[in-house]
Amino acid sequence: MLLLSSSVVGRRAFVPATASRVSFVGKWFLPGAAPLLNAVQSASSHNTSSRIPKDGLGLHDFIDANKNKPLTVDDISSTTSATDKPAKGLKKKERLRLPKWAYSKIPVGPNYKRIKGNVKELKLNTVCEEARCPNIGECWGGDEGTATATIMLMGDTCTRACRFCAIKTSNKPPPVDPEEPINTADAVVKWGLDYVVLTSVDRDDMADGGANHFATTVEALKERKPSLLVECLTPDFSNDDDAIRRIATSGLDVFAHNMETVERLTPKVRDRRAHYRQSLDVLQKAKKFAPSVLTKTSLMLGLGETHEEITQTLKDLRDVDVDVVTFGQYMQPTRRHLKVKEYIEPEVFNQWKEVADEMGFVYCASGPLVRSSYKAGEFFIKNVLLERRAK
Image (tube, rainbow, N blue to C red; front, side, top):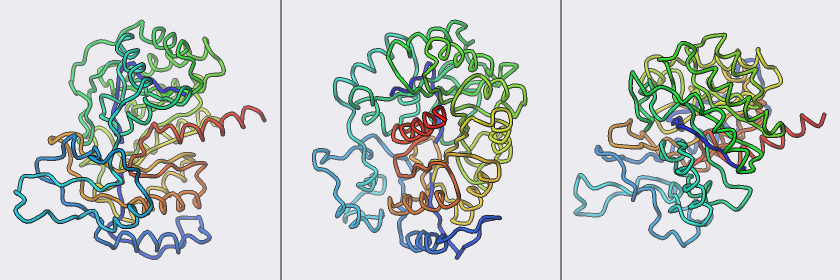
């Protein structure tokens, strides 16, 4: 599968600082949830946070110097804390290394080079590059038929300025290319994909937020290849009913809109025009306008959220019938962006997946390097959609 983007958007994590014994979540009683949540509390009570240098992180922090040495279970279990104290004599401004489990491979391989070349040739922008996704080597360098990329529509400049996102911002971005829907559809079909993810920058400068342009791209894809599965990671369109309906009923298979973080942290993490309850409304309306469409969202961990806040967010998502949720570790893209409050252990991500499964989500992908568009998750969702089509 291949996820493309003809422009690009960045959107993306956390673990609780405190936890309490919970066996009821809203109106759901979770069999066996108390032990799971207590396990999360136990894992979170350890010193798993890492001091992040004031000047942020660099590329070398994300690349394992011993990249040829595979990560083993022993490596993970021995990483009980991400707070390795610097050696004596370490200067204040020197950067701490990331935990081993947060390393990414250097992008290499023929598929990586082929996709990068095609993207440049077709003048497409990808979230993979613009948002500095740590999975670019894994996704672009995958075997034939498994390589993925996420296409971003409506340019590479966003009208909003979320404090976690590396995408360029401007109140007056360049006008959209009217030929983009057709060009994107032709390129995706030519590549022989069976699952594609489209996303976009926010375009508050357009009357409909770019909803018609987005939907026209979906329709062009479906016209050329009806069997193609299309996931759309959308802006909030200022919660406009007509814009949300236009996208939700365009023929897409998955409607995704990211919550990003818990309610308390939303004003600090996201642009002032993005609101927690507004994003919930967008997901609820998408399901209302297109009941058969899967709805999906993503949360970043490591921004200072608590166990109770995460639990409440999951409950809020189930209240509006969201089907899929993903968890990933927030990584500071540049020194100008929000700093990481803590690095979450892989075991804790696994425990949150179990909690989400118990709450009734159709699917949950959870791990330090999981992002909204994550090929393992897309593979699972693809199978779910195919099973539904067969019925």
